[in-house]
Figure 1 (cartoon, helix red, strand yellow):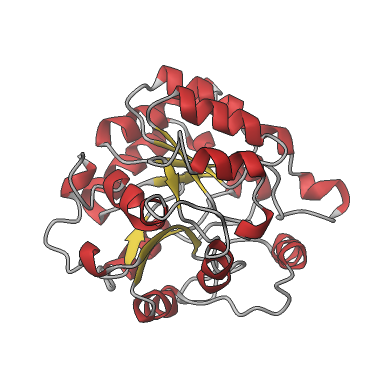
Figure 2 (cartoon, helix red, strand yellow; figure 1 turned 45 degrees about the vertical axis):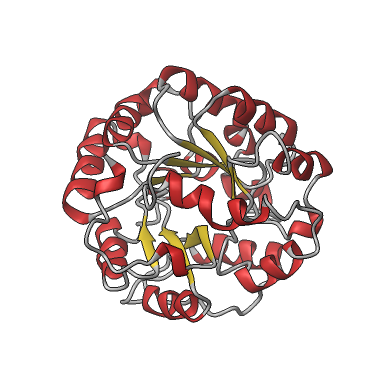
Length: 301
């Protein structure tokens, strides 16, 4: 199960102030980028991050260690839809393994790989210490409830690690003619509801405030016991009021801090989160304890 993978590491959860469940490895040690130059430029423009330097995984570890935080790190495998080779999952896992006090590796497998992808998922968890999987339906060009992805979900559920799905609009491809070929409809959280039904023990994270489907995401997370929401990709000052209301009440044990680093830094996110009307007893749940429990870093309960 997921809780056994990190045994023997030096991560001290009690000393952490927060766990960021959504950060991107945008560049490998040899300079290969996760996105094509066109899509990367569109993303930078969307987030107002022109010229931001893409940190290496070693640099990300130093950044989070300095802040007494841990971070989930992943890339996105979009080769089927975009033709751009991904940063290898093994590279992400190996680099994160150098920093077990600060970094938690997730992997990304293109669901179009079918059963070969399912075999790769098992190997990545069992041999490389991967702790979860990232999907970006719009970038990967698939509906989450497409049964071609089900062999992959089956393995992820069996291994007991989370599946994180991008939901809502994406800045990647924004402003490019035709959106760079990226279809937003794939990222409607209601498509993930089918996955939650068909894989009832699978831990699922719906990434981002799911514009324009925020209410749908809240409905799925309140209805399905193992569906969570991360708050990445937006400054908290722009959160829809219903998201804040549910985070303060019905979903207080299922909402997770995520930044979307490096396009949004945790410094900026946390500064704006400090000004949000969140109950004092709920704030530490969102920042750390919900993620620590979900990721198997602390015991359930």
